[in-house]
Length: 118
Image (cartoon, rainbow, N blue to C red):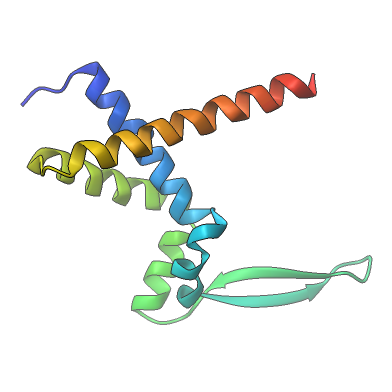
């Protein structure tokens, strides 16, 4: 099996975007919610801060810990996308391309925001 540099780039960008979608984005909060508990603490200024802590237990604890670690989730997302790619289903390329374009757009937006701050 060989993979071109372009295919690797598409897989990498798709993995980046899907991982961020699962771990950080508000739109997927409903997926993360069952695996976390909210912990409220009052800071030194008297403001209440809310922290998300993985729930205890085997299944919920596992997924809570997984979703709280960007690197861990990234490995599993990469495995999923590579398997999807290797089986080459008819839906694989459109999904990968959309995620890759969104990932590249996110990186460009971050670069532009940093450039505008200077």
